[in-house]
Image (cartoon, rainbow, N blue to C red; front, side, top):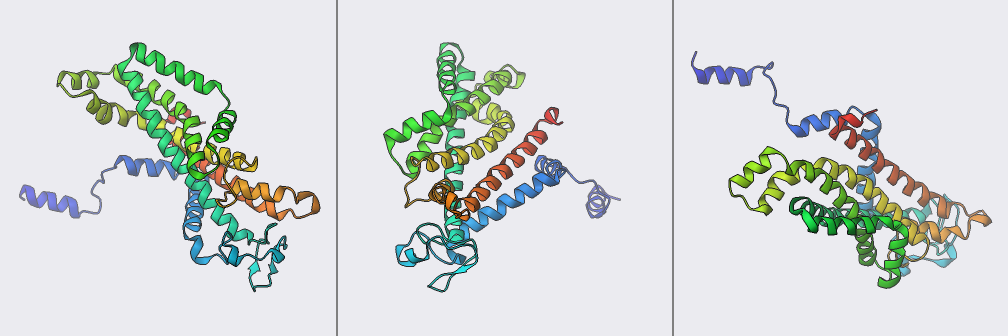
Length: 308
């Protein structure tokens, strides 16, 4: 039998060995945790609901032409004067709470994802540069990182929002400013180890530029801890934005988020209108817990030594 025929037989054979790619190995180990898989499914469903909300929710809760103040504070399952069935009730302004929650979820996820991605890029760039250059540059950058991390995140965010004002872009900038130092410290610690390895010395000997060595050789080995920090910080950004909006300094009423919805219903809690704050609070809790569960499993897969 020729070599070509042997290769064809091996490919056609059902018992032929399969090549396990890194992604397949990661997915297989991630699937070992049913709780993490369930959390990932919950995140996927919530993202799909938030993206497609305008096509199936009863009303646009922030279109004044569709909101009737006479329908304010209706309990769950009530029927409004316009014929809507409010399955989760209405808030103090007469907005359908289910619609408002999904619209608010869109803003919360957008703020968390955008701030996380931008902070990761900024922090990773600064951390890589500090570790690779070393010397006084590294010392100055790490002192700045230490100074940044010495301030409570909520306090620094409050100070920035007080100066910048309300708005989605303003709060994303504030969250990036608060979070970049976490990524910088993580990447710098990993890059310091990678910088001393033989493959980096070999790349230098071949005359590769510093930018190429950082981007093609050191950065890929810094991605596992960076991904873990990214999942945790995304959940933290969503919680921090909700806190700022609850305090009334985050987003304006025209750009709702889950934190703002909780804040709007807080004044009605003592009068028995629990649903206005309760349901947005439950949704916010589910989002944060689901992201953290996924992040914990990703950490265990990427660093088996941390498994319990």
